[in-house]
Length: 206
Image (cartoon, rainbow, N blue to C red):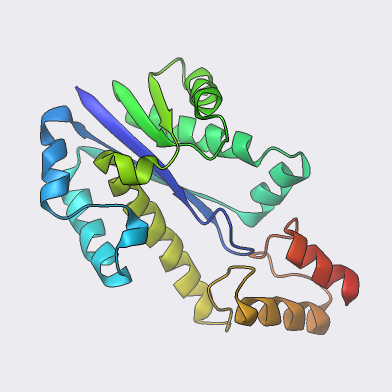
């Protein structure tokens, strides 16, 4: 029996990709994830996440990581459909890994509705959708580590050329970078999410 866990990383930041990751493995091997120290990525240090990323990939039967560009995110936000975009990509992961059952971390206020949407988009695969699934199910915790590490690596790549902080709207370094870049170039870099309110504020005030 193949069990899949799916989670996202980078939903809130104003720049960089939104990452969706999924893992699948035999039900009998799930305990092995706990044994190597897998837990919700938010409860781990960056170093532990990097270490576990490699270990998880060795241990699972299959995995899939999808990066959603700021351009796609903006198009969905304009249609008030960011949850729909996540559901579409989570369904892509399910179709790719083809498990018997998938546990997903719901970004929708209504987890049942979110699960049904993913099921519909993935040829009626069995989906179990929960809030805080990343801290409740170790298969989702493993997916959260893959998603977070992939997202962090994408940001590190950007940081080689720009001083852009964490990417979150609450980070003054990030806000300063976006404001100064826009002031100087009169356009936003392709890795910034133009539909985010703090970004629109900068564009309107500059």
